[in-house]
Image (cartoon, rainbow, N blue to C red):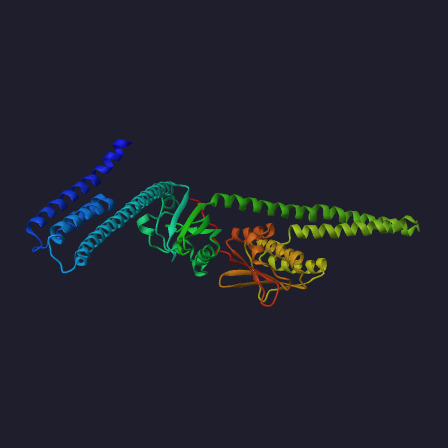
Length: 480
């Protein structure tokens, strides 16, 4: 430790010794040339040297020696008219040298402080730069891993859109699923992947708007491959924002669910066919058996009454119950198989639905069909009826309406079913959550290539509208 202190003090000691020697040499020279030639400014060199490199003490020591030499060489040999002049000159020289020494040492201290701060700032900046470089390298590696992962995902189409909705990246899964090469699709608008009717209805723009407002948007629908074939897909769109919240674009993930949709459609059609079979069995078998029992009971009642037996009253009671069972059986059969297999069967079924709903729920319910709407596809008719049935039931359960209106129209190659009520309406968050009934209605609409829209009525209540392509216009998509 002592050796280290000695080594640290050597430069200062050397500066002091050099300053003393140089001051002594200037003093000797000043003494030899006498007061005629002033060498006072030359003393500033050893004073500054000692104060700068040796510190304040060294500077003061050399200043004292320089003052003594200057007095011996210039003040003492001179003759003054008054002794105070000599004292003044000696004090002036001493003060001047001391001030210079203090200023130089102070300047040295300030310089060292600045150098220390610069070193500290440089070290801190270097550490920060190293940290940023490390973070940037880690981020670059992470982005590279993510890019490689996305590019090599084959079962999902994953790509990015710019804020205007144009495609800016394209992975292997997207090329495999949609058929476009990266050079063909990058720069193209997102709506190029959608059917023409969806583009005309601005559904792709609505999906991007939904992701912008909510942060993410998820939906199922038909997409179009490069060669023109359609397939069912789940589309998930996520809005991408920077630290300040500015929209930078969208990420899109697409998964082919054609096989699942086909299976769901088969299950739904099977369930509908089973309902129809049970309805026919109730009507044709059980209904006929009950009708036969009613006929036999009527004959028994007539015989008992002709003999004035008291059991005839019980026969009448039995006949009433049998007739009531026949009515209930017919109603059940009608509910399970409401649509007759003919083009105008949907209109008759909706008319019956309105009448039954009014009688059952004690709510005014009307069916309107300005012009005949012929539905040649049995599945389409069945799904539309079930959507209307569920909408009426939902309105009665949740909206507490006084009036319900069922409207069936056809225009521009589409069949439109609307169910309107004047109830308390709905909250948007309840529609976003989608109850089981609403999900089933939406699924039924999609399964026949249609769309389902729910919105507030003009004055109150709710309007549910389902639009499906007319026969021949529906395309349910094909698998890859």
